[in-house]
Image (cartoon, rainbow, N blue to C red; front, side, top):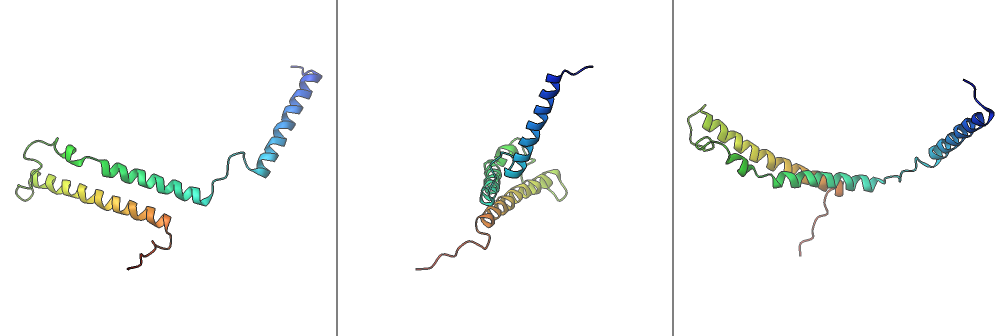
Length: 122
């Protein structure tokens, strides 16, 4: 395959342009706005709060209500399905409560890395 002189010039021009643009981008950033540390922290806080809201909005009661009658009561002999389900449901509530507390604490630690300021008693 033959390349004409004008085609060769065009290829060289494109390669030089690309090289120059790459050099400029590497020296002055890739063209993306740099994200500050504060913006990164705010982004993390927002994501944590979104997950926490989703957990708080989770309607465990509605899910549990879908279980057959009699299987969601604490009445049951040791080792029975009813008692095991009751204990598992309680574990779900406790787990969600611990998780939402941990998420709240995590977002507070990101806001106040040294700890939340103490209120003065009047």
